[in-house]
Length: 128
Image (tube, rainbow, N blue to C red; front, top):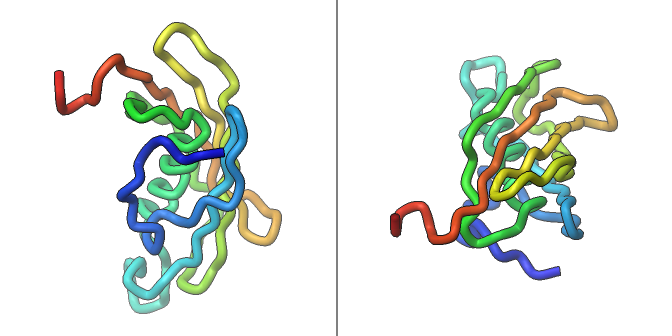
């Protein structure tokens, strides 16, 4: 399946798509030192969120998809060197709205989960 959205994402910071199907996507991310929030190597949560958001966008896979809202939980800390797998699935479609559930795992254990509310717009958000 062809990727139709977010083509310019920096895969080093948001992850590499490893699975793409209708309504589903998986994104793998190896955390790097630039993601550290402190000297102990704790990864800033924004990078985990970015990976999950990217997976949600790919699950919808429309050129004009945007994030409208997210309800998320950070379940476990992530450290530099961890390899994360985000699994996203569209669970509801209602007009232009898509609800996408995302779980981010490290070695099969959930470290993050969220519900992303995405919108498929008739034109690119910057062309409105």
